[in-house]
Image (cartoon, rainbow, N blue to C red; front, top):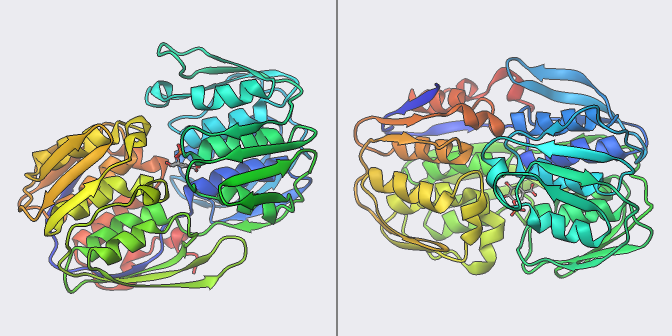
Length: 450
Ligand code: S3P
């Protein structure tokens, strides 16, 4: 089984780019497949999660050709052949692997088909709540059975139907639920509206606009009219700010460091991590250089002695995936960091409150667990430990970063899961660990789309 072995570093001077955004790669595969013609998707994330969604679309009739690929991982540039919203029944159940985004978004479009289909995933995905999508999609007229051992969990058997539009007041702030309902709304005759309790990432709305499908957003109310066929278009996926976050924390917490991350997505519904690290004392400049559809730019960060902070309730959906590595930053900072209103962490790839608390505690941090978050009294020296990722990619990567600041060796076991979101993470980690200062060292040949 693969593992990371990490020791402390004393400097970090690097420039590189991270692989394509996971949320956008899923959506590009789905909307490209629903569109009315060929679409070239560049800088697609060649991760297991996104490849599963690509294969799901293929199983539904939307085939693709690989134009470029990253050896040992998968396609980074592809041409998708859109089916003008007409999907065909899959020959067998569709494997969504580890991906909640893949399963929930696909369920949205399968709900509006005239056939029955099944979606399944790995043990982690089969333990995550699906009631949050079966309820609204059921209100629209589809029948979704949850066949899992755990009540309300995958596998899903989806009996598609002629859907009716609804107005759905979402009980949780979830971009996946919003997107599932909006995608189902495309298959209705009428206006589907989602009301979100707090702002969530808006990639679905922005990408629909790139495909000439109009949506309307007024505050936290988002509507779409059914019957619009996405116009095929080409889409370049920016680097994933959630992947960049690991290195941003490493650089932020190391005084004297300088890191430049190039061509990363700077969508304001994803950049709270930058605000938090600035508040903690890191020096940062982020410059958007392309604002067509999805803002994309560079982030330059200089490390400092960090101080603790309080994460604001409205920031939580914006940085939910970054909380494991923010907790690591908090352990390295002086003073107290409070993370509350984040109960959603308990239903991610692992219960990320427990997995973060257990691993940080094993490294010597002073951390208190709450039902909806954690409080960290930072500044205690971290020591190396023998840790498990519990099969969660973001836990594996967050604790690789913690290991860069710990005395002795940190072992993170069970790290193959990083391929669900960050192919090439171990190469970047090894370049950073070996203190290579030549920026070229940090660029994996086929990940460096300058
Ligand atoms: C995602 C939304 C978030 C996030 C996940 C990706 C998306 O989940 O945690 O990694 O692409 O829509 P929720 O919608 O459950 O908050």
